[in-house]
Image (cartoon, rainbow, N blue to C red; front, side):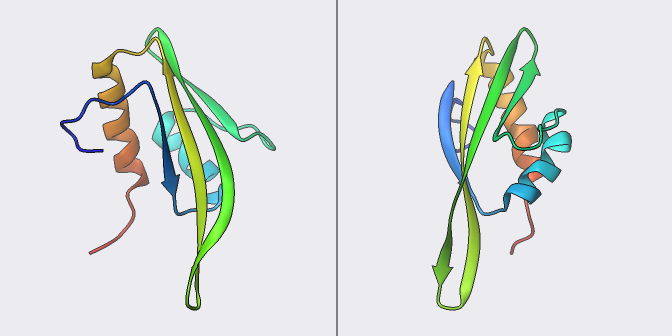
Length: 100
């Protein structure tokens, strides 16, 4: 999603990480922690909330490389467009990994 496009109330993304990595990143990225054995997280934002639901997918295989994958559903409730954009900017910065 480009920085100029509004953040919808609900959308999905795919991430190249394991469940363990995802859970380790969530406290810094959202300010909330995940419960063991649960594949969802509720994050309070102002008067509303964001619910993250994730599913571990089969790894993507390219030749000898295996990349873990997860599908994550984002669902904002009672969060304004400006608040969604602010949250996602911070969230995306926390999840950025190296690259060229």
